[in-house]
Length: 110
Length: 112
Image (tube, rainbow over all chains, first blue to last red; front, side, top):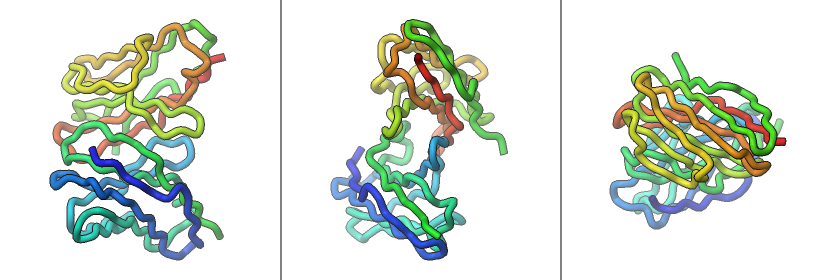
């Protein structure tokens, strides 16, 4: 599975959009981009995933660049409860396990 | 909706003791994954099972063993516990060729 690079930490004001970047320059054609988050000491929670098209669900939007070498997770209206570590993971769609690297610790501040 | 159930929620053991952690996957999920997360660390994959057979193996110590039973629940057995085994242990499950893993709330193991 391709390696990802994320900033170690970010701050966001409550009510504003949080844009979390992820670089995955060695991604293969059959690898998807997954985002999970972990709120303090809880189990990781699935957010969204995509291959090459932008995706949106009730939690977030995922923007993948045309060359697929980077992506951005967007939380449109961040709340204090969105404070968590966000993991960008690249793997094939049925690739089994998730490999967690260093994620981004997002702090949403009032 | 039913989620992944892990028990116990907290476990305190002494060095050299044994521990058994249990995981009950979401109904109809046939694949189970175990992860270990030390203090301030990212979750590390230990082992996984599909249809009661080991499907993948990560950095699981030889002192640990695991299995998946006919009802698809899984148990992680840990022997000769060491202080460094103190961690959060997560179980996750997946249905067949499903795209997502669903995680339980974890078992906090403290070795004294």
